[in-house]
Structures are given as C-alpha cells and as structure tokens.
Length: 174
Image 1 (cartoon, helix red, strand yellow):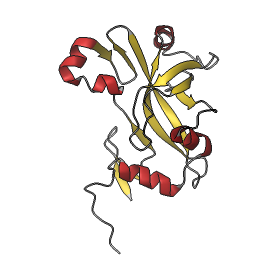
Image 2: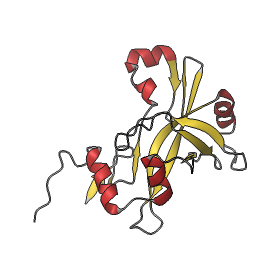
Image 3: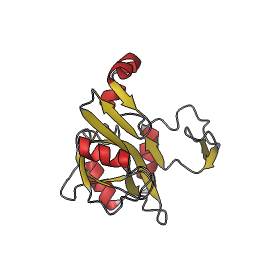
C-alpha cells in the first residue's frame, strides 16, 4: 500500500506515520478573515490577539510492531510568551540543554477525545528541529497511555481509518 503525502506531494510506501494539524483549533475555527485580523502564524509558530502564543510540536507514539518506528501527531502547544520568544530567538541554535517548557495541547485529536488543554512538557532540540511534547506520566488520558506504552499495527490502522485516510481509496482485491 502507498499514499500521497500532503506535505511533499510524493508517493510513499506503507501507511502514514505522521498526522498533523495546520493550526491550533481555536485559530482554525476563526476562519480566514478572523485569522487575518487577529493572528500571525507560520507553519511553526502562531500568536492570537498578541496575547496567546503557540508552537508546533511533535507528539511521538511508539509503533509496537515495527522496530524503533514512531507515529507522530503534529500538534500545537499553547505556551507562555517567554517560551514562545525563546523558541523564536533560538531558531537556528541548539537549545536542547534548556529545561523542558510547560504548555497545553491546543488541538482536539479526534480519535482520543478530550485532548484540548491537556498539560504537557515541551522538549527542545538543535537548530530548527521541531520540538517534542510529552504528556505527564501521572496523566491517565488515553493519549498519554498510548504515548507511554505505544500502539499496535491494528490501532495505527484504526486511527488512520477514523481520520479518513482510506476514504475514497480503491478497495484491495481478494
């Protein structure tokens, strides 16, 4: 099986191992005119009303049936202004030695309800590598459990099916 990547436009073998959100949910819901008036955003950072700050991150989940493979949710984290500014100032620098920053998940992940606002820690890396987010070990939310324990091939397939990845694709012949 192969798929066409929405980012690069090329065909890739296997199933997608990344699924992301283009904007924080609250910003996306504003529509084009609201975003024009109230936001500044790129594919990596976003501000809303010059009072709320977001950075794009990856939330990794281990794929149990594949050696060292990961599924990544491309999510937005709402952070304080100081964290947002640190990230912007350090775009081309190695800030991996910085302490993890605190934030909140700014997307509702449809396959695991009630994710909007979950507390998280943000781990920074070298250069312009996208930060990773980690849900608290004490958190018993389904997404936190999947991040800690990993997911099976079946769960990976079920996630993609629920997200509509297979909609409109020709059915396999038997």
